[in-house]
Length: 436
Image 1 (cartoon, rainbow, N blue to C red):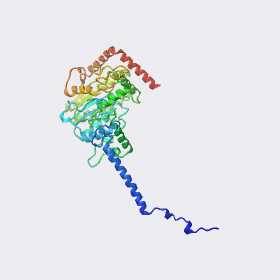
Image 2: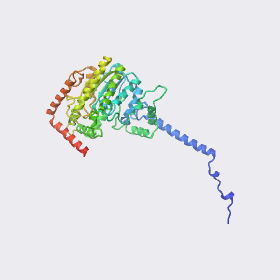
Image 3: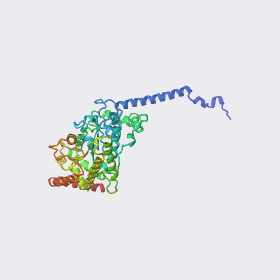
Image 4: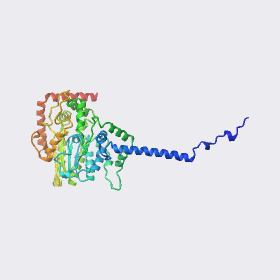
């Protein structure tokens, strides 16, 4: 039997191993390339700053427009508050985010800089959380708070993207973990790099996000209306989407059947108490939604709850003011109702060229509507075309005010028969489709 020689036939495994200096060289190259690549991504994403949380310089045509910020508002605005440290604050939902101007002349000089921290679909707990966080960064002199019925919906205390941990205020020596995580994610992640590339690509396209003061760029709303096919289609779309959304109908309720409304009202009470305690002037207003939205609430049998909600917030405000002996200015205004602003006629179907004066669609009012509101609240201006636009509420006038709105609705029905029939048919078809 043939016997193979050990010296020539047995493979010495040691001969197949890389020399020690080669292994070290490979690891050194690997880590050098890895670290260099990471640094490239960090520098690139920091310079583009796609979410606007790093504070990189804004360069027209390069990174000034930040389309991704709109979808990360709860993160972005927390970091902006920390950096800007405003003395004046706008709170509320996307209605206030779109319609209330931080540059309006009615703001006190001591309120500047004013920042719009209103958030899409904001719930009352979120609003309180951002108020408290902003005050921790810098003392607030003045706050304007837009209230919406759906913000008090007890079924959903917060919206996706809200992290209460992000708004915790630690000592200087202990960094906020969630804020630190946000920054690291925004410069060193695949999603951040995608967002940076998206930011670069869309600078010269019709995509608009937030202004430096936190307000939505109104160009975005204009383009949304145009894309829908005009104001008529935009109105129909927002009403239909509210009814079809998973929480669309419950947005018109705040837990009256289960008693859960007390939770939402508690947070509102905390907002008022906090402003009194910190000596912050607080101007609260109920949003000037379009008459079509008001009529939708009536047709969906939510009007009784809507009125009771107004009574509840009036009661809280008045009690807190009496308890504090008017330590600071707290005012509550109602801009909802059937008036010559909210009853603005909607252009006919297919009319894309005509632009409405006061509204984008049934939910969101324009900046000029918000300016009239602030003229009334902050400057005390009253007159045409706002003679019946805005009523300061109190326990003494709330019932008379609610009765007046019901009477105004009766006149609206008489003068807008076709519009009301259209709304009834839209509700019937939409809800039938949803149940079917």
